[in-house]
Length: 311
Image (cartoon, rainbow, N blue to C red; front, side, top):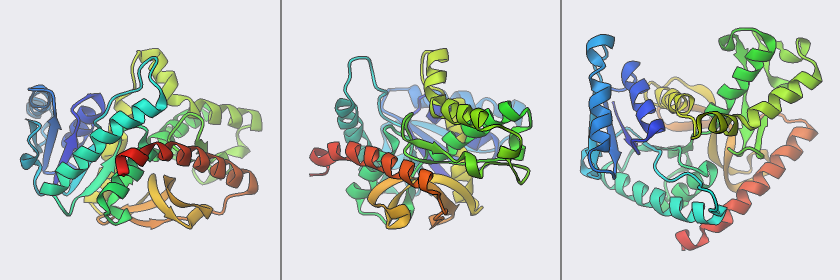
């Protein structure tokens, strides 16, 4: 199994490292436009082999998409973060051009690949990739919910003082500080609703902390996080390559589900060898439905800035 990761920055390199270390794929190709950058990252990862024992082949290349041929999965992390003074429209315009170019190039060499979009704004870039390529929606997956859900579980674990792996919890909605929806009502600790252990005030704080989880890390680190994002991408890729049928919140095109159409937004999906194999339509309560509709409106408003790119 072959995975290509476009973008050798912190998230892309961490994703490659986790995939290699866990033996998720037999080959990982890391591509970047910066001369020698991907090659250096791949060499560094490969030199771990002597001490960690993994056998995954990791190759770095500079802007030569022919080396990505026949990839089973392509992960797109390329793009720029929003900088001080930059408008949302400017960020979308720049990253939309980058993502569209990347998708066109990878599909020229891997026409049957499944594309995982990580570049921000993630829901909008997923929508762009789908509309620009005309691929079936199961093959274009936005990775955001897996990361947001991991942060939700982390904050629940801290509040409960219980192991994070004993907690089941999910975040749906847009991948943004004001658009994500941590489903506190459905979160559980070993099958028991967390509401039996935590007060509403505590649950509200967990939800609020989750929503600004990325911004919190940016404030502490001075840059965006990369360990959890990279591991979250690898988790999603693992479910695809090994046909694990895991339920993961992903950004996917909705066609009537959750009362929404023509929008890519985070909802629980079954992820397997065909990519998105099923969208799970949860019974949301009225409050959750209203929050989801508000989130969808915000994402749709951002999508409007793609008109010039998709024209």
